[in-house]
Image (cartoon, rainbow, N blue to C red; front, side, top):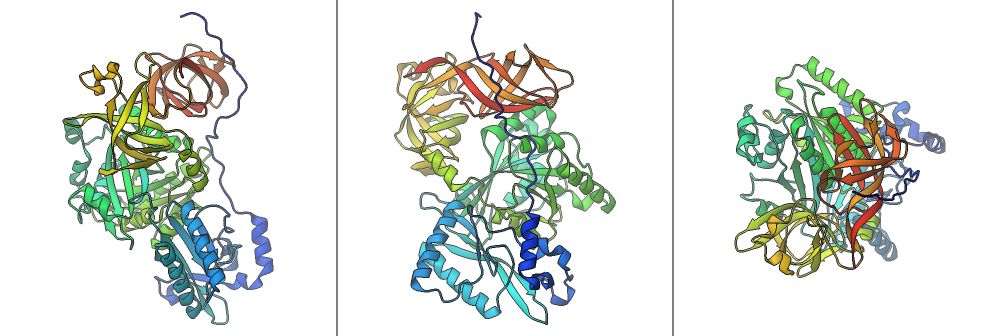
Length: 611
C-alpha cells in the first residue's frame, strides 16, 4: 500500500484505568475534632426509627456519622448552618447562590441544613429548622423551583439536648428542557435478571418468576425464544416533582411518561452473553451513559461477563452501582458469600472503590450524594418477584444527578456541532431518520450539516428537517443529549439513492461545516494492554471502539516493538474496511478474544481534508 510516515512519541496521555480511591483528609478531621470538643459526644439518628432503638455511635465513628466531607466549591451541594430571618440583601445573595448550584447540577441541588462549611453536623432546634426550611422554600419559589425533604437526622449533643439536620433536594427544570435526563447502562452476566429488573421497574408490575416482566424489553423473536438480549433496547422511567414514580402503570405510552415527568431515566438494556460483547461495548462507548447498573445474580455470584463488564465501566470512568437479584430463591449463606466476593472485587486492585450496602432509604440517599458517586459503589439487594428492595433502587435513582459539570457542559455547547449516528431508520412519508448523541454544540431545525464519512471518505451536505427527543418533537438539542433527526439530502450523490439508509451507517457523524474535517484510515494512540496471553506485535488485528466507531483495525507500528499485559506504548492503527472520523483525545478501546486494551488518540492522519 506504499509507505506512510508517522511519528511515535512517548505520550503518556492514557487515562488511568485504575482510579484512585477518594479518601477524606485525616488531618482535617483531627483539626475538626480538636476545634469543637462537643462533636465527640454527638450521635445521629435517622428520624424513620424510634429514638430508643437507635444504636449509640461512639466518637470513633465521628468521621462517618457526625461529619460530612468539607463543602465543595464546585458542584451542586451546598451547606447551610441556618437560614433564619435573612436581610433583603442576604436573601438575594442566597437566591443567586441557589441558581448557581442548580446550574452546576443541571437542574438539581442538594442543600444540607444544620451543617457547617467544614462538614460538621451542628444541628438546629426544631423552630430554627422550620424557619430555615421556610426560607429555603421562599428561595426556591423565586426561581420557580421545588424542594423535597429527603431526610432529617437527630443529633445528640449531650445532657439530653437533641438537635436536627435536614437534607433537601431542590429541583428546577432548565428553561430549554422538558425534564432532567439521565442515561443508565444496564450490565451483567447472561441470566442475571437485567431485562427482568428493567421490566419490573418501568412496567410497575412484579415478575411471575418465569420471566414475564422481561418480554416487553425484547426486540427480536430469538430473544423471546432464548430469553437472552442480543441488541440494545431503551426504556424510560419518570419521576414527578414530589418523587413519585411515573411508569407504564400510570401512563399508557412513553410519550405520556415524558410529558408527566420532571426527571427522566433512560435505561439501556445491554447484552450479557459473551457472544454479544461487541454490542455491549458499543452501548458503553457510543451512548455515553451517565451511570452503569451492574446486575448480579445472588445464586450465581460473579460469573461469566460480570467481572469484564465491571472493568469496562471502570476503564471508561462511568460511575457504577450494583443490584443483586433473585433474593427470594437464594439461601442466606449463598447471598452472604456472593456479597463478600462482590465487595472483594470492588475493593481489589482493578477497581479500588468502596462497596456500600444499602439497607434503608437513608443509605440510598447517602449513596446518591454527588460527592460519593466516583468513590463508592452502592450495592442493592432486590427481588423482582416479591418486590423486596426495589423501593430503595427507586429512591437512589430519584436523587442521582448528572455527572457532567456546568463548566464542561458550557464548553461543549460552545463548540461546533458534532452528532454521532448510532441508529438509522427509513420511515415512510418522512424519509431517513438517524438517532444518536449530540457530543458538541447546539443543534436546531433547518441547520445544514455534513454527513460522513461514506465508503470513499467523503462528507456530503444534508439539512436537519425535524428533531425528536424522548419520542416528542423539539426544536433544540444541546451537547450530551440524545435525539433523532430527520434528514434531507442536498447533493445529487445522496438524492439519487433509493434511500439514504443504504449509505448511512452506524459510526458516521454530522458535523458543522465551519472547521476542517477529514476521515482517516490511520491514527496513532497511546494504549495500555489490560490483558493478553503473550505479546502484541505489528500485524495484530483487533476490533477498535472509538466513540460510536466500531471496526477491525491492524497495528502497523509499535514504539516498543511489542506489548504485554499492563504495558503502555504508542501504537499506529489502520482501519481495514473503510475510513472513519476520529478526533484527537478520543478514548480508544480494543479487543480480540480475551485480549483487552484502552487508550487515547494522540494523532490522526487525514485521508482527505474538507475545506
